[in-house]
Image (cartoon, rainbow, N blue to C red; front, side, top):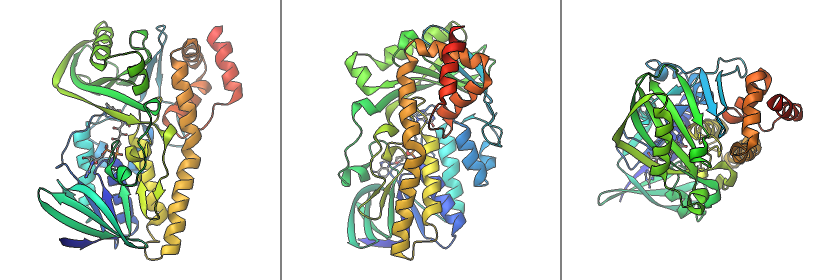
Amino acid sequence: MEEKEYDVVIIGGGPSVSICAISLKKLNPSLRVCIIDRKKFPRDKACGDGLGPGVHKIVIELGLNHLFSSQEPIEKLAISSPNGYELNSTLPKMGSMKPLGFVIPRIDFDNGLILEARKLNVDILEEFEFENIEDRGIFNTDVIIKKDNDRLVLKCKVVIGADGARSKLRRVLNIPYNSDNNTGIAIRYYCEMEGYNEMSLRLDFLKEINPGYGWLFPINKNYANIGVGIDVSKLKERNLNLDEMFESYLKYLNGKIKIKVIHESKMNYILPYGCEMPPLVNSVNKVLIGDAASMINPFTGEGIFYGMYAGKSLSDHIYNKLHNSKELTIGLKSFEKNFKRNFNKHYKINNTTKHLMGTVFSNLAIRACQKDPEILKEGIELMMGERRNFSPINLVKIIIKGLF
Ligand SMILES: Cc1cc2nc3c(=O)[nH]c(=O)nc-3n(C[C@H](O)[C@H](O)[C@H](O)COP(=O)(O)OP(=O)(O)OC[C@H]3O[C@@H](n4cnc5c(N)ncnc54)[C@H](O)[C@@H]3O)c2cc1C
């Protein structure tokens, strides 16, 4: 079998991966980094294409602003509750940066990131399927990949698995996938629109699709990514059907906007939530990030930010430690500790909020957010930032301002 040698081999070509590779090469250009993906880029991916302010921040930090240059930024958020209350708000300031969202089809966004990685001399091996790993010693692993009947061995110090929600590396490492309770499923279509004037990220928790939610993320005023999502356990328990839920959501939207669904664009897939995140660093040098490591927000379905954050943070922790196994071990451990400290509670509180959205609480919260910018700011930091709790004072205010 042909062999190649790298410092880091990354499986998957999604945003978690590209950001990790780009950041590694920017911090230490001498590193030998390789990305393998079973698809050829540009490739599509089932997604709402919504990029929250956290993604914008990471992209700016890495000097990749031009990836957003052709896209109209989104400054507004709209959320509706099952009882028909609706919140329309500009995204409140989080830290010093103006918070901006974007909606960029994944076929373009992911390809743009892969091209950036290639410019930095990251080897991109497309249409190669990851097959297996074999350890040869400490920080010395063979990654076996195949294309048609050809096999290739990639020798490396660290293997990163960001090969999506049904990660093969996770399976090879014997780590079970998330339970149905902590997995979502969602369907998306691209749609043409007439009469849509609001460029806002729209999330609808309607009674027609309760306990699921719908989204309308506009790419421009005439074209949007529209979809519905729900927990797999709820879908099964209530014998619901994603296509029927999408039809109900469309009926609701058609009352406001004229929509033409592009049926061939239909795609669906699962979303592993962060409430059941597995160990990130496994048998010394195998790291899982992104959907492969169940990093999706259970409330908003946002996954790109968390995967990118993990990719960037991992590179920050290891870029200068790859020649010393003791230091590398410490770097990897500290990456995992840091990520879990930042996000474990964040995922939990978002999970609780999701369950409350189907109850009277959502009406109270939306009314309170309309009246009080501080509550709104905290709510959005919780959904789209790194916030880990809701202050008790604001919880009391939600009840008072929501009721009166
Ligand atoms: C319908 C839907 C809507 C969503 N909407 C949003 C949204 O609006 N905003 C948001 O932030 N998140 C959203 N998410 C979640 C988001 O799509 C994921 O969190 C994100 O794509 C994770 O990125 P990743 O890099 O971890 O993996 P992925 O983007 O899944 O990439 C994994 C890559 O690995 C490759 N691969 C898989 N197996 C192998 C193998 N054996 N060998 C080689 N390559 C392999 C695949 O080809 C793929 O390119 C949505 C998810 C779904 C399903």
